[in-house]
Structures are given as structure tokens and as C-alpha cells.
Amino acid sequence: MAIFRAKDVQQLSDVELQEQMGKLRMELVQHYGKVSAGGATENPGHIRELRRTIARMLTEQNRRRTA
Image 1 (cartoon, rainbow, N blue to C red):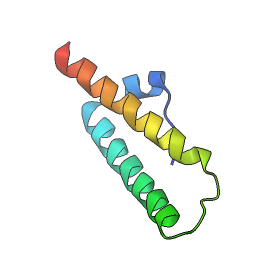
Image 2: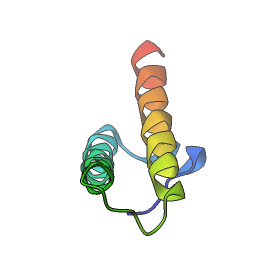
Image 3: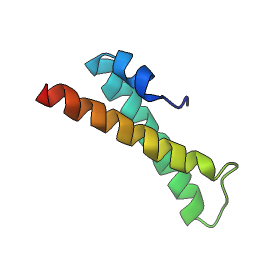
């Protein structure tokens, strides 16, 4: 899944934002599942990037809600 930057997130519609966030959260759960089962992910830094991207999306949702 692609990592979205702040400018990319701002250009998404509300529906697209929800869909992409759902996909990213599912990917994050899969990575956490691998790690908890004792395996190692191919790219450990990807988990961090997923978390940051989800945070960017939540920030944008809150900004739209209050504006």
C-alpha cells in the first residue's frame, strides 16, 4: 500500500479517506500479526510509516470536522 504524504491526504475526498484508512489499518494489523507470531516483517520501518500515515489521515479528518 502506498504511503500518503500530507498533501496527498488533503486531496482525498471524505469517502476515499475512509477507504484508504481502512486498508492501511488492515495492513497494519497483518504486520502486527506476523510480529506477534514470532516472525519478522520484510521491512520493519514500514510499520512506523503505516502508523504515521494513519495519524495524518486522522488529523485531516479532525481538521475537516472542526473547519
